[in-house]
Length: 502
Image (cartoon, rainbow, N blue to C red; front, side, top):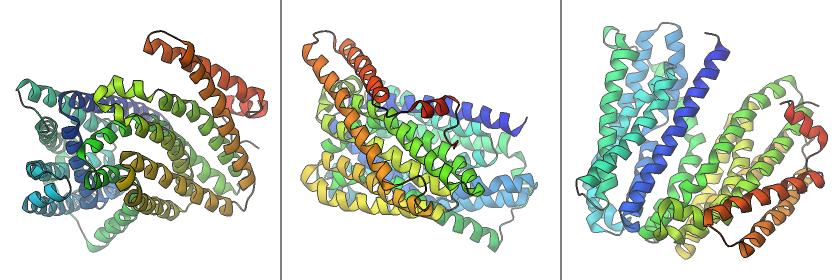
């Protein structure tokens, strides 16, 4: 099979399975939200955020190093080094997770009292310790990617979230209630998944594992640790931004607010896929054009991608913000309606996130991945500072503002660095400011049409939503074309799928 066909096939499989896993994840959240109290829902996701933060630390991103270097060893048929790489990654992860788990068990009471403000939450922390150890076996999933078994790699999340849904339903049917429902479901799902991973890996993926001698020399260990340390820094911001909001809310406010926040955040994350897609597009194109020395084309291309990202995401973000009550009520029920304002803030934050991610990823294509690492770290520190400042006063709305502003800082700093890298060719502050102003003006007609229709229409809530969005999109599209936000030449380039032409 050719590389192109293999890439296309793997992409289709991974995209399809990732959608299935995401749907299962949302279904799990909905089941839990509708069967436990808001406070118990918040306690679970506060504990889960703590677990994922600790797991990120325990991994040291050696899993990413395994994904990178394992294909090299397999290509050279160096199964000894392949085995050594796997054992190094698994060993480090098990040792660190075991130590952290021990600390969680020893200090469970203090953590429950200080962080969750509930002494009875100590049992949740202890189950958290067990989940951490089970997560260590996810190194096998990284090995699946290293063996380029992408179907198995993507299937793991489907099994994990699908298993959580099934076990949640079984636990509920058994009459168990409260925070124990998601805790038991998650532990059982992770335990079953660990068994499946071990069996599949040693029987089907790496059957010669026990027949070869592991090779693990000093240069190899240094290579893994160095690469892992770099990836750790590059990914720290994303993990921090994704989990610290819940932890700060748990510490400064109440578990009820954590629950509301964790209804708003995953709902806003529905739009995150577009930002990731844009980043994937920018990476190879920026690399190619920078290699050719075509700075002017790259500058024009970045500006156009920014423009179309804004134009496409703006109505999506505004729709989610304007119909936030309906979205929250549909997914989580009336008990979570206090999260409406938070969702509205995060809906705009997602738009900013897409721009920031596109700018940060471009630096990898420019051959300067260390810049992406520093941008990620800067955004993480900004988020921490703003969270400490805003969350005690404004609660979950403060967490949403901190989240959004941290990505805004990443975007502005990143754009300034790209502007300097391209020597201002075809990418000036004047152009970006005019683009932002145009998009801001375009939001007026969209919001105005929705507000007008909502004030005069008397019909089913969902029919009203669909009609309002359709009419507002029509007016929005007319304004985009009528006022020349998109020129005919640009539209022709997009239709020809080559926005980087001169």
